[in-house]
Length: 308
Image 1 (cartoon, helix red, strand yellow):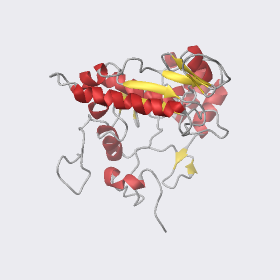
Image 2 (cartoon, one colour):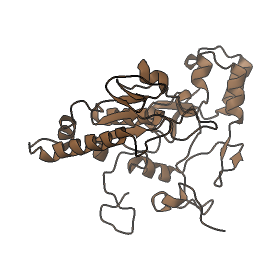
Image 3 (cartoon, rainbow, N blue to C red):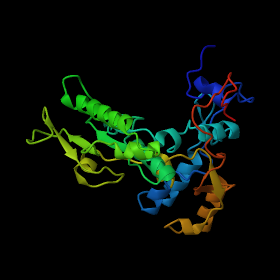
């Protein structure tokens, strides 16, 4: 009875049709995910809360209705999501792209916000995993409400990016583009944040906002880490990697050694009922991914460089 406004349905040419629903297939999976694992092991929730959470968490059906069963991904849709870069890949094009990753801080908004700062660190982790470094990636956290035209710092970012791109274009050495990108980065362009808590004087001040130049890191210390803490997603708390690039996990048997608490036989039996096929083994990567296919892929109708 109308257009389905889901992220999957507007990308149906990539994911294909799920014959069971007639709608787009979904790379969406929480089978085997142990919600709350890290905070169970750190003593922030009880064994009973951990068991109840994972017993009752359920999943979403095709219309985003909550259902008792966990949702399992369509294997082909997931393979395409991972192998074609719908799940952002840190290599290939991103490895040769100069990135100034600016983000307003909205983690503490009432009701939450999807644009959490942890995603910056996930992007950086994906770059490191693919390339061994993230030297083409600079983070800038600009306060809680973004830029306005009367603030000089927005212009600074554009000038820095323009200088970076100009340096790359001027480099005619016969070396890999990824190397050119790193060495073309302007001096002084590095991780930073804006301290908006009060006045302050000295260099880097813009209308009461003080620029703090320091490396930004997940769970990092320093001024920026204090003002703009990064909070984990449920997948991270479930033991998933910082890169957050696994849709469907490989499964492994329940193992008492994975827990800092002692389960009774009754509690262990309850976990076995919740996870009859095992729990996520995050170290093995995505279950359905088969390897990155490349850039500038076609998803039809053209057969040139068509995604598999």
